[in-house]
Image 1 (cartoon, one colour):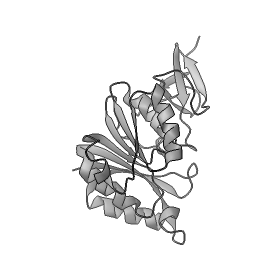
Image 2 (tube, one colour):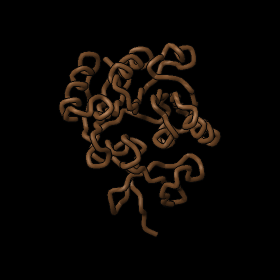
Image 3 (cartoon, one colour):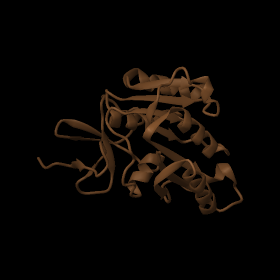
Length: 224
């Protein structure tokens, strides 16, 4: 039987040998988001859909290094129902840990159900605008990942990175332009936020997420 899946250039991400779909190697059985699964060599690979995840969109658009490794500890701001978190759960593996922050009780309930099977997920009902609320519950982390549709996205990201991100750690900010200003062109907003982040961090990568995520970009930074 011929192989269907091969290693992607990004750590713990996989891709079709014939095709462009990307996958993670599932650490648990099941399809919590009705995702497509390919079985290859006795292993289940879950399709990571770029129209459902900004991180998947950034990878498909050519992000060369997302900075995330097996065993990493991640602070995820804006965890929502846990779609992207479930894939990061595969990437960091059982030795890793993901603190999933979200202020909405309804979506956090879904995240709690997800965490029952994925033991490396830690659901936390909190507001990322106020990291002081969870400063005593979260350790220093290797990665800060943010996907929050608020006007002060950059401010929230910088505040949490300063408080929790280790030196040389990576931050990934999914910027939603329309949540900042619906009247301005997204490109101008992206450039403005990039310049703001460059004052605090080393910008390692920048990707527009079109056509998968309209009016979004991903900015990847490294803490000095």
